[in-house]
Image (cartoon, rainbow, N blue to C red; front, top):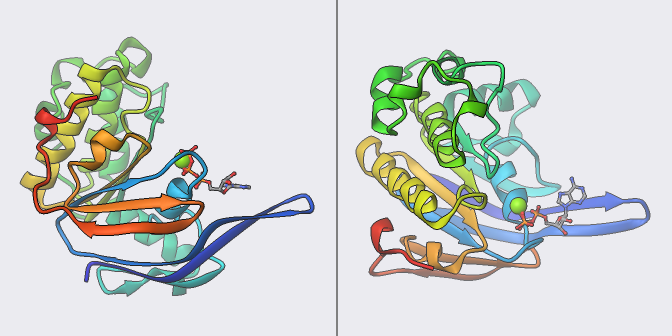
Length: 232
Ligand SMILES: Nc1ncnc2c1ncn2[C@@H]1O[C@H](COP(=O)(O)OP(=O)(O)OP(=O)(O)O)[C@@H](O)[C@H]1O
Ligand SMILES: [Mg+2]
């Protein structure tokens, strides 16, 4: 299995209160899939993505990605793992505002050893003509497509998307979903999208639902819906 999560728990301490973000969570996912994790606000989606991406560590349990047990890595090991293996796409794009579109993409290309051609990737996401602009000169949808280019150019094994359409209108959200689908198909990148939008979960080859830090549903979806047919 490409992703193996075994009995992962994570809680946060806020003052006197202990908040349990993930409770004894286990799941396995195959390489090359497009997966959606559905759950309401506070259900643990971001916590789970952060652990998968090596941005955070669980209190207990093990996580293996592509045969490497990342939960045994020290901070340096986790940094290398993040650089080489993972691309991130966030709700609010997180582009570097003082860098142009091309520079944003180049900034992550150099983190990986076998990055893709930035020109090819910028053309693929449809922002090649904007390559010399700064992020604030682009619409939200265009910025998110640059953010996807920045994740894809590293040619990572895994792309983690945290509410990637949360700040976009319907048309732009659809475009972003179609693009993620295309990346999954063309580059065989395993993609995980976290969202509270139930319509988006129909794209997933496995229906996964989190509630209060627990995986309350994990069932194969025999007929994933193409992004262009997703509607809400
Ligand atoms: N750094 C933190 N410090 C304290 N509590 C946290 C922290 N990160 C998350 N939590 C808590 O853990 C729980 C799960 O949070 P998480 O951000 O994973 O949920 P989410 O499903 O991503 O929610 P949303 O849809 O609102 O983004 C919540 O109760 C949240 O308040
Ligand atoms: Mg979140």
